[in-house]
Image (tube, rainbow, N blue to C red; front, top):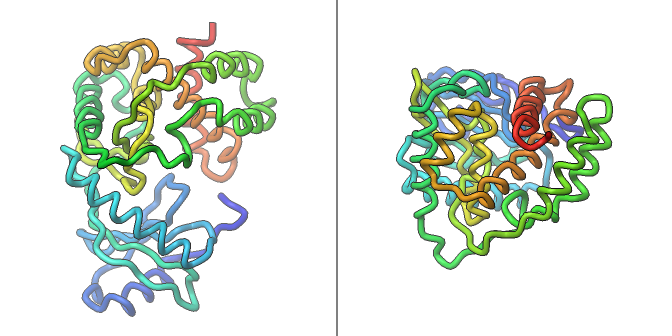
Length: 297
């Protein structure tokens, strides 16, 4: 998926795990097929998993990133009403894999999809429960760190222009450019809350019509309160989104900023993962279609 992607397979992962964590010797180590774009995931037996970063970086920097993610994941777990992975240990770089890596608990469940529970009011209410629980977590004096989504929308102008230029043959870029002109002008709400920051389908686990787990929690931190509302555009149809919005008591500014963040995220998925990760590319298309249905006329 990436030009700087690191190769890792079951044999390499198994050797690293058995060598550095002898307590897992004898447990089956199996690659987990996912749509994830940041880490390669391997299961250890039925209770644990390992995340190997996919993109090359300085090992010392990677250690800092993983330590920060582990700390954020512990805090998320303490504030989330649904199960989420807990960090267990950090593995060391070696001659076969050049970066540190993370061992965590495994959460069972089916990965959500853009359509599986799109009409479910029960699922929409679970998403409300998740977001409201995270929002009341203590900021502890922290503010948005300026990385990624969650600050000023206009800071993403250059990225959106790249996405529009790369999507000429894929999307209705003229309509989308006009949408962004409106979205980027939406004012910052003036306060921040604790946020998951990446509530895409791949990070939510479901069973029947209910949310049963939340993944990829290492970015938990302060952000625009609208940011986690992207989940409504990624996963719900118009009627379920209405239930979602009304139960959250989202005003017009918050709701439109949530749509803007969903737009910003979806625009990068369609072209970047067109051939390397079709599921993520299709998610981008699905989300953009929902946004055009509401804002593109």
